[in-house]
Image (cartoon, helix red, strand yellow):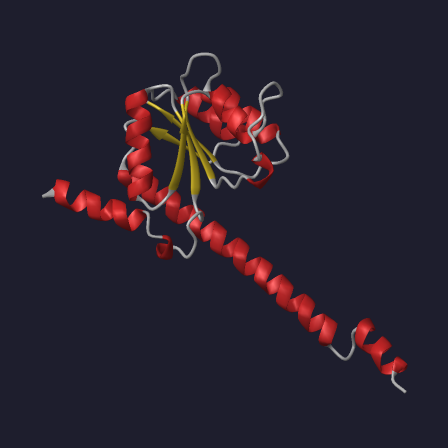
Length: 190
């Protein structure tokens, strides 16, 4: 029965009306294990997220346009809401990727979640101190992904609400009788 329900959930995950925008939550998932990449990709899609998967920290940096040697095409318009990365990967670890992302001005504010099958407290503490949003133990559960998504949705809603309120306030100030613009308009009337 679960097999019958999963495709329906997958269809709902691709329904842009679910959250109002087809690219509202875009997650970059980084893992060197093909099985783990497919698993996290499925969990994210079932949770109504747009997903991009890459197999290394170096490829993640290239995708984000942070690799000095090879840049992604058109990364200026790239909107990533969350980066989920494995900790232990050959070449560059998830911790090193986290540090590079937090050093970048373009992606510093993007939450980074580290995933690992090893429950090593000093490693977890080091990642959280460096700015990781969370540290998840593998196998990642659907409840973990939903909790992250809900948390991101609140942040996105809050950010949208604040920007809307700011625009409304600016509009009110422009049309207020006490504003310098309105005073100038009064003086120029014949």
